[in-house]
Length: 156
Image (cartoon, rainbow, N blue to C red; front, side, top):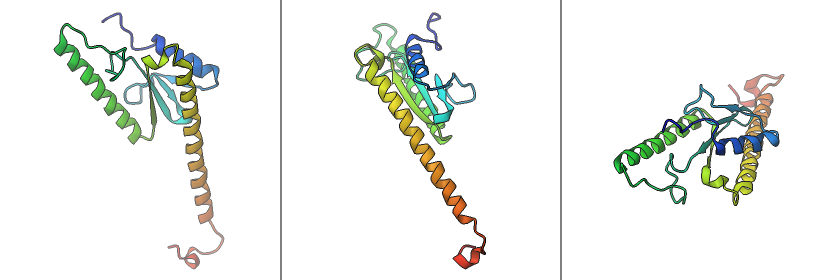
């Protein structure tokens, strides 16, 4: 297991290169965020996790097979990984971050373009929604500022 790396994996590099070519800028493995997400797009307030199907127990996936030896160890390890993933996503969402999980099996040649295109679509959709909220809230604040007294409008 010493040869297994958590950073700069092949699936992660595929996602990184594709996003960079399309103008998405990100930070890698942000140490201040829970779970150290693989990619952090601050502009979109989004964290992307690129998960291996085996290590994170991707259910209903042909890439995920339970080992036939040392079964208890591997089941516990995968369950701990899955619980940790849920906890980290929950912490990030309470902090106001969107999270996207890209699975290793989704980056196979047959589904690669579809997966990455939908990732870009999701990021752009998040960006539009977040900024439309900010603009709406900003307009709302500007409307409260008036030259006349607030009591005249029923505001205390």
